[in-house]
Length: 141
Length: 141
Length: 141
Length: 141
Image (cartoon, rainbow over all chains, first blue to last red; front, side, top):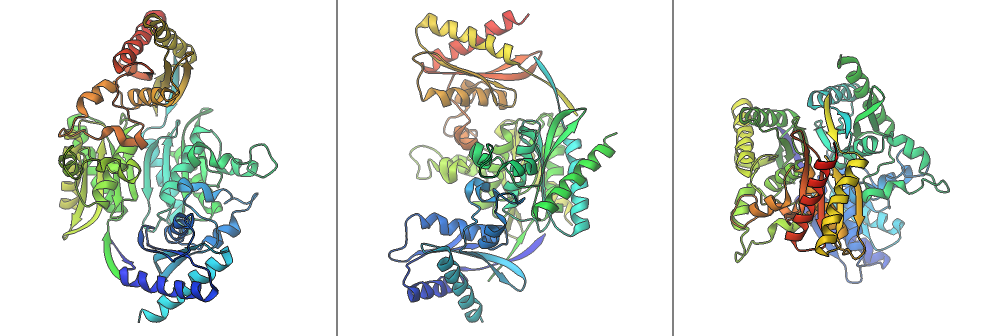
C-alpha cells in the first residue's frame, strides 16, 4: 500500500488567491485551475473577463504539471521537431500541454497537485502560476 | 484466410519483466504497456512511482509500435516540419506517438506485439523498452 | 493537506491473481484491470482468449468503481428510466460503466483502488472481481 | 505465442458481395463494413444511396460483433434497464453497438472477423448481414 499527500480544498484556495492577485496586478483576468496529484480538478476560478477557451487550457496545464510532475514550459523546451519528445503535446487525447503556465505543486519533495493558468501570454500565465505557488508556500504554515 | 502470430500473456510478462528490471537499475519507475499485433492491450504495469500521465502514453507508444510496425523514435525522426510525414502524431485521435519509447515486438520477421514505456526521458524509455525486448527474446526459448 | 492510501503494484498483482484463478476455474478467460483510487490504471492482464472489446470495458469498470466508490452493479440498479440516476452510463465520455463487474477495493474503510473484469456475462465478471478482492484481502497480511 | 486466423481481403469481398446482393433484392442500399477478428476494418462499401450516418454505425456493428464475439442483436436483448448488462452500448467510447445488424464471422469455431450492416431497419440490416455470412461460407470453398 502506498501513502501519499494530496492538496486539499483550502490549499487550492490559497493557490488561486495568489495567482488571482498577480493577475489583477498585471491587469489580465485569468482562468485558474488547481488539480490534485493525479491531475483531477480540485478548484477552478474564471476571473471576470477570463477567456472561454482557457477554461479547458488551464485545466490541461494543471493536469500535465501534476500528472507528469513537470512544468509545461519544460515540455515546451523539449517539444521541438527533431528531439525525441516531439509530439508529446498531442498525447492523452491532447491533454498534455506544452504551453507555459502549468506548474507542479511540490511539498516536501512530493508532487501534491498542479496549478494551470490561461488567458494571458504564456509568460504572463507562468508568472501568475508562480505567484500562486509562492503565496501557497508562504501561507500554508 | 490469414494465419498470424500474436504474443500471449506469458510473453507479455517476460517483456514487462525485462523492462522493469532495467527501470529499477536506472532508478526510474516506469509505466510499461504490452499490446498485441493489432495494438490492443495485453498487459500493463505501473511500477510504484510511475507517472499518472504515462498510463496512457505508454499504451499509445505500444499501440503505435505494434499497429504501425515501427518504433516511435522512427516516427519521431520523420515527424519534422517540411517532411511529408509531419503531423503523423495527431492521427488516430492522437494515439499515434512520435515520442521515443515504443518498439514493435518481432518474432521470425513478423510483428507479434508492441512494447511502450513512459515516465523517464525518451532516451530512458527507449532503453527500457529495448531491455524488455532483449529479455523476451533471450528467455522465450 | 490530505493523506491517502493507494494500492501499490504488489497489491494489484494479488487482485489479478485471485480474479484470474476464479476465471480459470469457471473456464472464461477474462480481461482484468486494476486502477488506483483515482481510477488510473495500475495493472492489467488480458488472459489468453479474453475479448478485445473487454480491454477497454474492464478498465472503465475499474475506473468507475474506484473513482465513484461504487460497484458498477449498484449503478446498474439505479440506471433505470424514470429514476434520477438514469443516463449515468454516458457520463465522463462514456467511461462510467453500469455493467456488473467493477468493484471498489476498500481497506480500513478507505477506497484505495478498483478492480474491473470483462469477457464473461456480467454475473461471471462480478464473481471473478469478488474473487480478486477476496484473495487480496486474505493474502495482503 | 498464440496462432490465430483472420479473414483476408478476398474473404471480405465475399462477405460484402453476399450482403450487397440481398440489399439490392430488398431495395435498400446499405453501408457494409467488414472487420478482422480484433475489430479493425478490412473492407467497406457504401452502396449508392447508403446513409452517411451508417458509415460509422456499420463499422461499430462489425467492430462489436468481432471484438466481443457476439451478434449485436444479442447485446440488444441483454441491454435492458434492470438487467446487469444494461449500458453496454456506451462502452468503448460508444463503439459497442446493441443495434441489430452486426454478426461475428466464425470459421471452424474461431471468430475471424465481423460484418456490420446499416441503412435499413435493424431487421433488414440483420438479414443482409446474414446473407453476407451465408454467401461467404458457401463460396469460400
